[in-house]
Image (cartoon, rainbow, N blue to C red; front, side, top):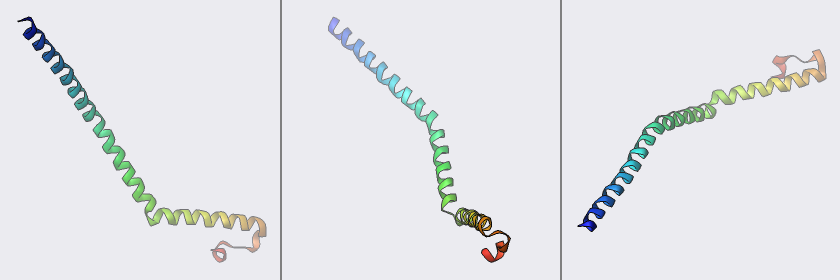
Length: 85
């Protein structure tokens, strides 16, 4: 009889341990899921922006203006922006 009681006790003990583990993992999943979804959405939006032509055109314009500023500093007023571009 003591053996059956001990076996039942340990069965309930393991059920409690695994039940607590399952509940903890479920709560963590529901807490972490929104953060993961928002992070994925931000990553997808950033990737789409950086692969778009507008980002490349903006960087090309910035680079052209930097080159023009360097050339104007070297050659002075003889250089106008329209002819440079």
